[in-house]
Image 1: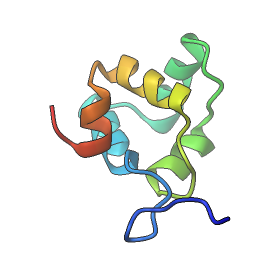
Image 2: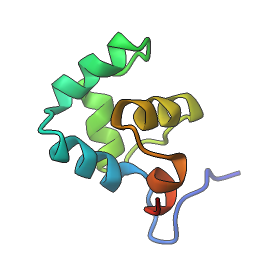
Image 3: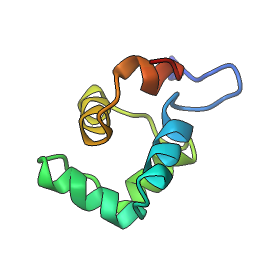
Length: 82
């Protein structure tokens, strides 16, 4: 069974918003990876690149970590709505 993708073939819904939030806070991908490490989520710069370019799925634990780091809701990350 194929893994789910968006209508346009992307593997996640949050990649563009993750990049937008990272840029908003003037964080490099390496800086963001360090923040993930600080809260116990094993993520490196390459994983962030793959998420932002929609080449990797995002787990529920990663989604929770992204929301916590940027202080946004899951709804914002998935739908772009507050």
